[in-house]
Length: 88
Image (cartoon, rainbow, N blue to C red; front, top):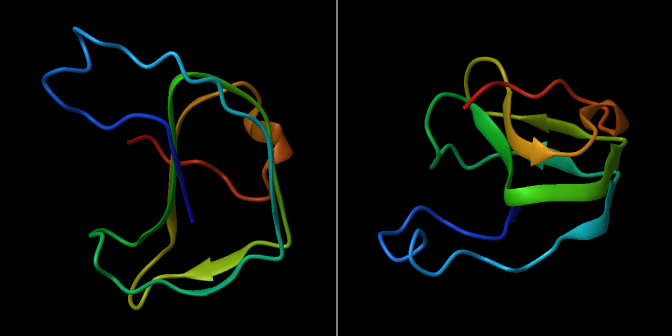
């Protein structure tokens, strides 16, 4: 599960994103992550500016090993997610 409007890149500071993400709804997302992203990360929701109206219901994701981590940044309201975000 991934939501991102910009990735860290040297030109981002010079040319920041003007993209606005809103009204994104994840419903019944289930499965096991590939394990490609380390530390049990199963989801990354990352916005350079605040994302509005992002929700998740029925989420059941697990890593191949260990505890699931959900990395989030710049979401207007994390209480609309059915998982707890982990600091990046």
